[in-house]
Length: 347
Ligand SMILES: *[C@@H]1O[C@H](CO)[C@@H](O)[C@H](O)[C@H]1NC(C)=O
Ligand SMILES: *[C@@H]1O[C@H](CO)[C@@H](O)[C@H](O)[C@H]1NC(C)=O
Image 1 (cartoon, rainbow, N blue to C red):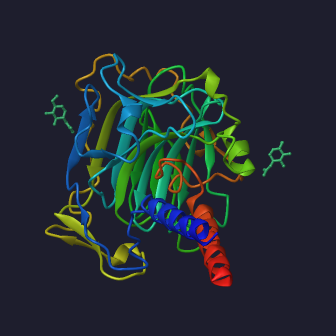
Image 2: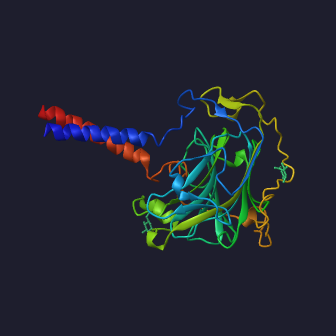
């Protein structure tokens, strides 16, 4: 009995450690973290091969290269969550991706700017909703209110479009094919939750409709996902990232999570300026998106506010299994304490 209990404790500890590794990010509001390497300029990649300066957060095998349209982010089975993340950060800037999201009920495609203290700006597409895109944001990981998301009409699965986020201290613009479809200003945000800390750029997809997920997530994603109907491919044509600040790296000078605490080492915040000229995103891909004949209506009238429970991507595409890790961790910790208690009782 004791051997069994101790094996269980060991297994539980191992599970806890393995699990913890999916949360590698150091949260600068909780402790002192390494500096964030700065992009400090423009990054541009048109897919043929792998995107340099992006790392895989999950299985490399689920991103396929060499297709005629671009890189394929494939969900073929439960727990597939192909995701890449930039190894650089931007402090205010612009992020553009030309893509076609994955089809499939419950499949979530996304492009995300995300900081170490969980500020987040999203574009998301639900595979079951072929005529829309969703914009969303989070500040400091706060998920207490669900009035941040908006829906924007676009024939997202019929053709490639260029989706962009333009992010400054004054406002965040979400754009489709260079048309602003939503603007968020800090004074529209309740509390201190306007995204304002150095961001990585991410691209990923995951199965919100995985039957293992919480019912609320499955509902939001339009699931459940029927994996026999897969594989579900998101196709990414090109990436453009511009850092409005300059320098070698960005640091948090205190634990406030405030933009005023962010310092540049070797450059200056907003030193690069906001005027990106005309980014030639598709310069090396003639067959690309520019068919903006069906560009969505501009202005905030092109979007619809909604108040559903849209989960933050951070706890999702950041993990290989798309599971709710905090709950798992608590469960595992509880199991360890119970196991130790049993072990002591039997001693
Ligand atoms: C999910 O949707 C079903 C059907 O509309 C509903 O009955 C259920 O309450 C929802 N569950 C959650 C957690 O949102
Ligand atoms: C536009 O493309 C040209 C060559 O095709 C390149 O030299 C230039 O850097 C690109 N501009 C931007 C803003 O990336």
